[in-house]
Structures are given as structure tokens and as C-alpha cells.
Image 1 (tube, rainbow, N blue to C red):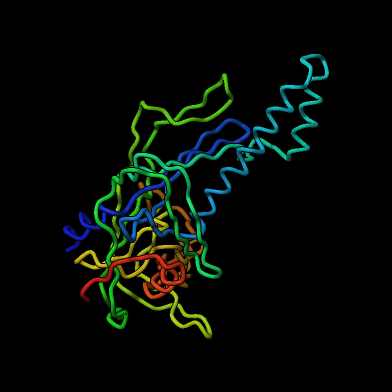
Image 2 (cartoon, rainbow, N blue to C red):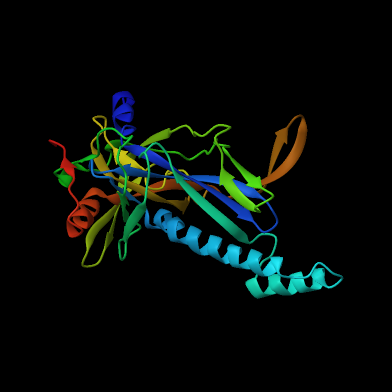
Length: 296
């Protein structure tokens, strides 16, 4: 049903790969999603995805300051004690994130600047990429004209990059830094998930702001488009709600592998939440960003 639409949407939907390192030395890959709305390098994503961009600068700058002070500590019998004092000053423990780096895949030949616009109330943001000479994405999103066509039971699909498989990164021990490499796997597969429209989210004096879907949005799909079988955009995935079903079981007796066991289960229904298409268009209009409309 969505085969052709997925191919169409992937022409302008891209992943943001993230690597983070804890003070204890663990490096973790992560991913999120954004999609382009015109051929001028302007994309939309979630505000919580956008927050990773300035956060990376702040976290990395602080760690560079820490390293500079650490390198000034004399390598003598008091080194460990002085290092502990420095760690307390910066509030570093083994789980603290001390480095964070982002990579925007298959978008441009180069990026000199990213101008960010965060919505004041919704989990919505605009990314304006600057300083490129060549774009590597094809086409751009086409938003539906008439949102009255969004009704309960409508089948729609989301896509993003929820399962990071890329491993083109490493820790450089000489520089005590994490870095991207030209070796390893640089990609992660896209992952679509369909569902039907179940309910709408609204706010007083604002109107409808969100679309609830019968299936969850997956981690990493945040910022990914919500679209129909023609590839027309209806919204953007931003969160998943967990609805308690009330079918709880406590110490229920079952037989497994020939043995009796007691199990407890508290089931939830996980439903995806998407920013409504009208709110995306309104925000783009506020910032005078050009975008395309579908025929429907």
C-alpha cells in the first residue's frame, strides 16, 4: 500500500546520526530524523532533536575546558586527588555525557551554518542549512491542502531511522576525542510503520495541534514525516504516549516448559503522536519558508 510512497518520501527524508561519550568512556550511537520542505536547504524536525545541535557545542566546549585544566595538573603523588577535585568542579561522574557530535547524512557537499527556529509551544523546529554548493536530497515534501480530510480510521505511515547500525566512529586516544571515520558502516536503514488515525490532540484557543496514531512512533523516528499512500505529508512524528489498558495480571499462574510459574503483567497501548500538518504550515509561514502543497 505504501511501497511507492516510501520511495518518494525517502527522497527528501534524512537521518541525523549522533555519537555521545560518557566520562566513563562508553560511546553510544543514536539517530533521529528530519525532512526537507524545499530545494533551498530548509527542513523540519522536532524541537527536542534541534536541541542536540547547541547541546553538542556546550558539552564539547566544557569538556575541552576540563581537558585543558586536567593537563595542567602535575603528574605527581597528588594527581589523583587533584583530578577528583576537578571532576567535582565539573560535576563529572562515569555516566555524565562529556562529548556529543552530530552528522547530517546525504544532504549537502558541505555545511557552514545551521540556522534554527524552535516553535514556542510545540515540539517542532525549522533547520536552515547554509553554505552548501550542492544538495544530495531529491525532491521535497508536499503538504496536503485540506486537513479536513484527516479523519478517524485513515491509514497513514511514518518513516525514520530508529535503529542505528552505523559504526563509522572511534575514540582517538591521543586527542582524547571521539571522531567520525571513513571506515565502517556509515548508514542505518530506514524503518516505516503504518497505523490508523485514532484521535486528535488540541489545546485551548489554539485548536487541533496533533494527530494520534494507533501504533507507536519508534525512538529515532522523531522528526519523520507522516504520509499517505501518495507520499503527501499529513504531519510529523514527535512522541509516543503509553495508555494503560487495565488488563493487569498479578501473580497469575501459568505453565511454561512443563513447570508452573507466577507472572505479573501490566499492559499498555503505545500510540504515536504527530504534529498536525496545519501547525507545520503555519510555522513555516511565520518564518517565510517556501513549501509545496499537494493537490489534495
